[in-house]
Structure formats: structure tokens, C-alpha cells
Image (cartoon, rainbow, N blue to C red; front, side, top):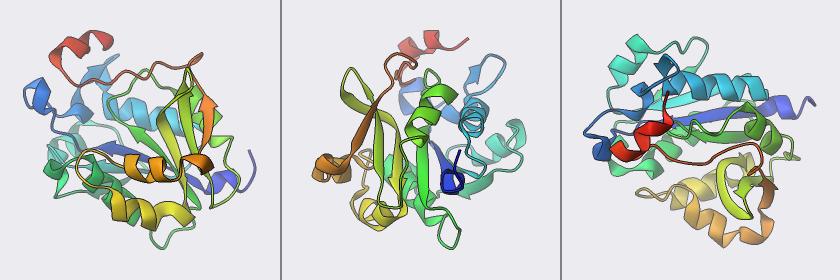
Length: 199
């Protein structure tokens, strides 16, 4: 890993309240004996992100007490109920004044995406101008890597549950797609029917 890659920080969006899961905060859903948020932190660190910020919202106090998040920067998003866009804005803002040149964004409810996929996307980082996304059979998905040059533009367009979707669509020609379908499964834990993915 180059020194530049060490400037890529991890950002976990873990504020969701699990509305379609009966109000069970996604960060605290159990998987292999520990909360989902811990798995996301471990995967980003194993991929090479030494700095990891975690955006909390629903049941933030419970997440702080329950999950082992030592060494992470915990970012409170008081507007988490407005959707993922607000968490992405809060997360990007938390890197203001740091030496991070890019962020690798993880969604807490995608445990089928592990360190190998994160590392593959991280490996495509070139500069603060980088825009990189995992692809599954050629279709853009997560994780995504945003060079610092794009943060202001992403924050300006991140609304509701769309996150960076509008920005990525507008800049599609500049997005490097990195195929990860052979090493990751990009399912979301959104409804009770999805809980079978968890162990």
C-alpha cells in the first residue's frame, strides 16, 4: 500500500433506524455474535483504512455502549431520520481539517461485502480526483470511494435516501468501476425477510 492510500479513510454510514425492520437499529443487528457495525469497522481496517469514522443516529447511545468501536471517530447525525443523504453529509463534514484525501464509504447493512472488496476498490485510488465504485456484473454498487475534490459536490446533492447517487450519475464518465461480483455479495438488510443473511 502506498503512502497515498494511507490517506484514504473509511466512512461507515450506520445511522439507520431500521424502519422496515420494526425499528431495530441496523448498527446493532447481530451477525456472528457481534453487532453489524463492528463487522464493517473490521472489514475497512483489514482493507487498509487506518482512520475510520462512523456516523451514528438511531439508538446512538446504545451503539456506543454495545459495540466495540475503539479508535473510531464517532459522528452524531441528529438529522438521521431524513435519510442516508444527511448521514453522508455529516460523515464527509467530519473529515474537514484532516489529512484524508479520499473516503471509502461502507453501508452498515451490507455484511456480504468484506475486506477483499474494500481493498480492491481502495487499490484503484489514484488522487483526490478519484471516483471509484464497486460493480456487480457491471452494475455500480458499494463500496464507493470519493476523492476529496468531490466532497463538496456530493454534499450539495446528497438528499433523502439517495446519498451520492445523483452526483455519481452526473459524473458517470469519471467513475472507475471495479468488478467485485466474484468476491462479495451486495445484499442489503432492509426487511425482516433479509435477516436470514445474518448468522
